[in-house]
Image (cartoon, rainbow, N blue to C red):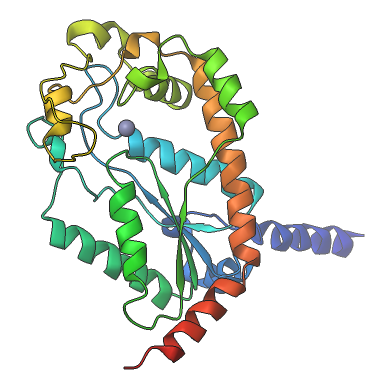
Length: 285
Ligand SMILES: [Zn+2]
C-alpha cells in the first residue's frame, strides 16, 4: 500500500512536470525539447514600445497589452513566448519623456537578429504580435525582407481583423468617436484599466488635450512624417477619461480568442515553409 502511494505521488509529479511554462525565460534547459514539441516549434514575439500614453496611462501600455494577450492565448494553445521586447518605430514621440527610440538601422537589425536567434534555438515558426500603432508598416517591410535570403524558418504577423459583429459590439460599448480615438484614448485606457488598473490615473486624463489640431493642410494624396506631430503635438489622440473596464474586457477577450486561433493555424501550417523553400530554390544566386 505504502509503495502504491509513493508510486502515485511520483507519477503525479511527473505528469505535473509536463505542464511547462510558456515564457522563454521561465523554461529550464531541460524543458526545451518538450517546449519545442508542445509548441510545434512555434515562438511568439510580442512587440511593445516605450512611449507616452497621454497623461494617465503607462509608458509601457503596448508591451503590457501584447504580453497579456500572449500569456492568455498560450494557456489555451501552447507556444513559447519571447521575453519583453520594446524596440520599434517610435520616432514621432522623441519630443516626449519616456520614449525609447533607437536608430532605424539598428531597430531593423535587432529584429532580424532576434528572429534568427529564436530560430537557432529550434523554432521554425515565429509569430510577431504587435501593440504599437507606429509599428505595422515597419513589421510588414521586415517580413517582406525575409525573402531576400534563404531561411529555414517563417515569420508571421498577427493582425486581428474582427468580424462585423464584433466591431459592432465594440462600437456599442464605446462612448467616444472611434475616428478621434487614435492613441492613448478611450480604447487603450480601457484595455489597461482591464489588465492593470493599478497603473491608470484617469484623473490626469484631461490635464492636456488629445484633440486634432489640424495644423498641416496637405491633401490626403500626400504623406509626410510630421503629420502626426502637426495633428497631435501632445502625442495623445482621444480622451482617456472615458476608459472603462467593460470595453477593455471586450477588446482583450476577442483579441485573445483571435490570437489563440492564429497560434493553432500557424502550428498546423506546413505550406508556408514549403512555399518559401520552393521560392528560394528558384531564386538564382
Ligand atoms: Zn499604445
